Image (cartoon, rainbow, N blue to C red; front, side, top):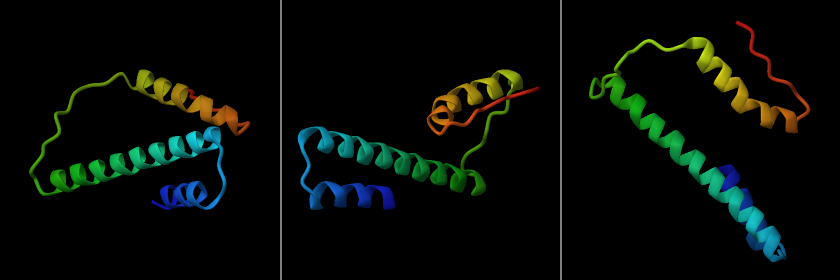
Length: 88
């Protein structure tokens, strides 16, 4: 919620042209979606712990999952001048 509040304050308290307003609006949207996902995940964990939801277990290709996770993290890491390596 801090990110949403901060971005909203920036939008409302400083003069912003259309481009800056769009960027701030996008940041607010992204933060709100992330918060929504966290809340949904917490509800799911609560339901699992209460025995109201069961997980269907199935085999997975672990190297494929790890490779996909590493690939999805690489763009963000590159923006921070960092590298993501996965070795199995």
